[in-house]
Every structure is written in structure tokens, then in C-alpha cells.
Amino acid sequence: MNDALKEAFGQIRAEQALKEDTLSYLYKQTNGYQRARAAVPYYRPLLSLAACLLLVVCLGLWRAWFTPVSVISIDINPSLELELNRFDRVISVEGYNEDGQTLADSLSVQFLNYQDALEEILSSDTVADCLARQELLSIAVVDDDTQRQEALLAGVQACTAGHGQAHCYAADGAELEDAHHAGLSYGKYQAYLELLALDPEITPQQVQTMTMREIRQLIADLSASDSGIQEENIETSQQGSGPLEQGNSPGSGHHYGQGGGHHYGRSAE
Amino acid sequence: MRSEEEARRAIDQYSDMVRRLCMIHLKNYADTEDIFQTVFLKYVLSSASFESPEHEKAWFIRVTINACKDLLKSFFRKNTVPLDQILEQPAPLKDRHREVLEAVLSLPAKYKDVVYLHYYEGYTAPEIGHILGKNVNTIYTLLNRARQILKETLGGDTGE
Image (tube, rainbow over all chains, first blue to last red; front, side, top):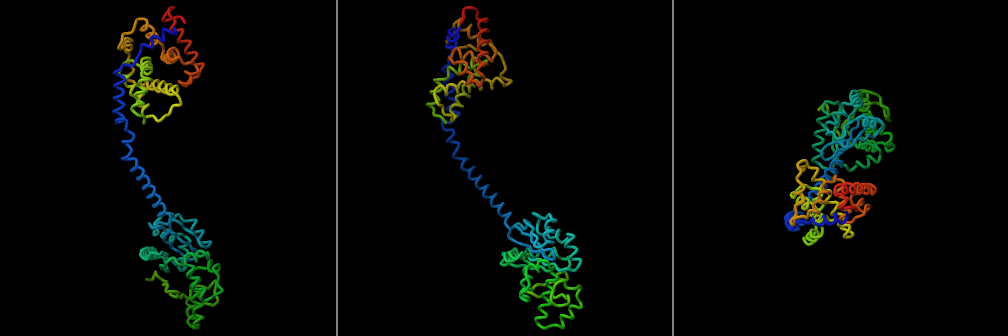
């Protein structure tokens, strides 16, 4: 059977026309055996370039989104800072004292526009209670770009209108690192520096737990005693709204407007 | 991509074998043309390098059988034609060859490849198992059953 099968299969041959047709087909399909090379020059380099560009754009956007360019320091007694990206979105919230950390943990303002975030913070129970007690709210906008500073400050002022006594101001970031190094938010660090000029013994740790009202009051008291305006101090303290928890002179009068051109009592404006 | 010279050499060398495998599986000349185009285009576009001529031949067998099976899976290809048409050749076949080939074509599909590869190409059962990706014992079984069927069909004059 082997031979019969072999002999029979041997009779089957590929027709010449079949071979020639196949060769023609191959020539046509491969564009004269050049298909791979002909197809490459047009789109493959462009695709690679487009992919690289896309990658660069994505990395750029990612970096721009997660790079902080501005800081909003909010101090009342909770002290916290919002870091903003160039799109004015909140990319991080950092508490700078125990109350601040508790408040920061309770907030969900990540990636919100700074005004929405500020509204949420001001309407939070902790801050609303402080404002109800006539505590002082200090908001510092820290940005090296003057134009952004102004725009952000205007936005912040719009948010704080109608939220009690608020002091909003803008500054560049020169002392931001020093503030963080001292464990203080930017706004509280500025107040600490004013206080330090009057009382070299004061430490950042002491300031950290004080409310802005207490710090301001202490500054006012020390300034008054330094300049010998004792009478005014006594008179002011009689009009104050509460006793000092920390300080070296009696009275709790409000001396806003002292210390580097800060303007308190914006809500009255 | 391979050159035109390589394509010509492959067609000269393997076209008869591909044609026989097509004859075993397919029902008409148009399908055979399709398979030729598919198999040799795949070869030209393939960047596979072969260790030896045997390796290359086994590649053609495997690709051809798979292409035939893929074509037969198509609903529209499942038509049947008389054996005469399948066995159409430029030179008419002698009666005894025609009888043997008709017996092979009448076998169930699973026996045809092993019969061709063993009786014509001279592959052993382990080699066929390797090429077709099947167990060697399965190949032995298929060969034995095919042999029995062919004996019954062709009678005593082809006794092995």
C-alpha cells in the first residue's frame, strides 16, 4: 500500500498557473516586496513623536497640577494652610496646631477651588464658633507673583465678607519656610515676629496655642507699655471683651492696625 | 520581509506539497488558490528564521493545514463537489492512482493528514505528532485505523 499511495500522491502537482498567480499576488500585496519599508516613513515617526508629545504634555500637566504656587494661611485659633496649584485648586491642607490638624482632617476640600474651600472652612463648626466668639480671623495670601497675589486676595476678601472680623493681606513667600521651620503657619508666624520684637522671650511653641486675638492683644499691650501710653491701655482694657489667657499686662483692648500695616476689622468695611 | 528570490524558491520547493495538502482538505480550485496566497504571503511577511530545511518544511505543513482548517470553518465554504473535480489535474490521472486518491479523500478528515505525511512525505509517527502538535499514541492509532479503512476500500491489491 505504501508504494501505491506514494505513487498516487506523486501525481498531484501544483499547476504552473497556480504558481505564477501566487507570485503575482505576492508581488502586488507586498508592493513589489517593499511593503514594510514603504509603510514606515509616513506615520511611524509621526506616531512616535505624537506619543512623546502626549507624554510630555501629560507630565507637564501632572507637574503643574501638583506643584503648589500659592499658600493661603488661615489663622483664628485653628491654624491651617491651603496649598494651591496654578489653577487655584487646593492640593493640600496642613494643620499647624492641634485644632488646625483636627480641622484639616475633618475637611474634604482637596482639589476644590480656593474660594469654595474657604467657604467650607469658614462655615465649619470650629471656625464658625470662633467667629461667633468675636475671635480674629487672619488670612494671608502668600504668592511670589504680584498679579496672582492681587487676584487671590480679592477672592479671599470676597469670601470673608460677612464672616466677622477678618484681616486679609497678601505677602510674598520669603518667610514661608522660616514659618514652617518654626512649626507655625505663615499668618501666625508674622504675628509671632511682631510679638518677638516686643518680647524676646516669647517662643513659637507659646504662640502656637494662642488665638490670634490673644496674640494681637499681647502685642497691643506690650506696645502700649513700651511707649508708656499706660492710660490708653487701661482705658482700652476696660472696653475689652474678655480677660487675657496669656500676657504680661492686664486688659484685653483691641489694638488692630498695629504691626506692619495690618488692617483688622475688615467686616466693618 | 523576505525577498522575491526567497518567495520563488519557496514556491518551487513547497508548492507541490501545499497543493497535495489542499487536495486532501479542500473542495475546489478557488479555495486552493486562496490557500496558496495565504500560505506564501505569510511566509514572505514572516520574520521567522528556520534552523534547517526540515524545520522550514514542517512550518509550511503546519501553516497549510491550519489555513485549510480555517477556510473550512467558514460557513460559505462548506459546499461539496464531486471527487472528479477535486482530482482535476493538467495530466489525467491513471485509473489506479485515481482509485487510491479517491480512497484517501473518502477517509474521515482526521486521518488524511497523517496518511499523507506518513505514506508520502515519509514522516514517522513521533515526527507527525511533533508537527501536528498531537500525542504520538494518537498518531499511531490514527495511522492503524486509516490503514484498515484503506485496506477495506482498496481490497487486497494494496496489501502492505
